[in-house]
Length: 430
Image (cartoon, rainbow, N blue to C red; front, side, top):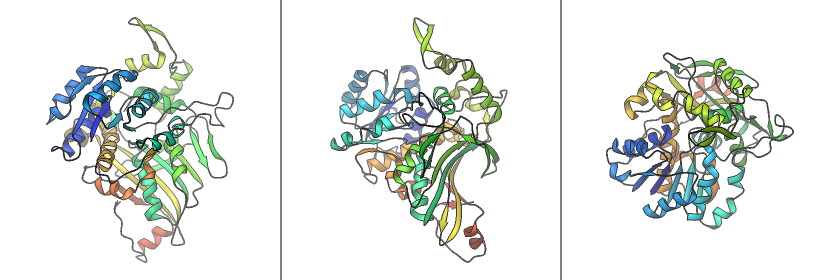
């Protein structure tokens, strides 16, 4: 596999480090070109790797399809990995198609709120632009694997794993994400892309129900307390717009009746986001003159806020991403939480990057390996649910990002605790 990685920020850097550690001898990844608008940043990442010749650095404007295409041809690229903010997605996605390349991203093409009823009706959903082009990609015999990060990505694999192994009927799937990360000397900090955080948290969150289809709510609605494993504990979570709600109902059935996404943002962070919106600092309109060009208010906030890469060494704690599933197994009610916990200190010591970006980055690299080895093999536009989840789950330990499963209170757990049932589990239980 010959990969063009567009964007060598926090997640892109982590992807390069993980790929280099996982495949030092070019068994399945021949080359990964590190391309960024800031050439110095890409060069620094390349120089820090064990085999920098396999990770050449290039300068690119990811909004310029001609520049992307030139790198594809120069390095004979077969897969473009989009590590940029989702505002770049349409250009990169379309360029990959034009060049006959496979494509991957961590966040799908952007939504557009309903012009008249933003908090009840969807208009353009996350990924609609890409799914509308599925047949074109399939006819060209190339793959767009969209949403290949942790959420979406790993969380979607978990949903498919639960459907395949753990349930006879599924009532509800909810992605639940939270952390106990703290930053010394600061009350607030962005753990990953500032631009993307503002986008997903302030857009109307999407929910799917079988009887209603997709609908939207107001941001930060319906708070609930969810208990996370590995010592993180109780976290208040609220609805946030996210791709899993657009993906899971397309692929998973077994009677599925509802899909949602909730995130543990914390009261201070929610108040910060509300303040940004009230001051119009979330605007994407390029109206502010800076350095001879126009930038948006959101771009300005991103420039002023603490850089997630620079603050990573001051963060302590753990972050947890996972998929909660409720349904029926062997005639009994069952609830499970399939998850992955990343410890910031551990990620810094092993990968020199913080837990949030490390947890995101290992998934697309793992998926690249499955694609390169022909274990995952499809054409068209697909989410991770389209593939067999078992090879992914089995590789997680090899990537030093093991998954876990909590059997929550239910009739099925009571039976298990009473030793009336036995079931072999691929994933560790906690």
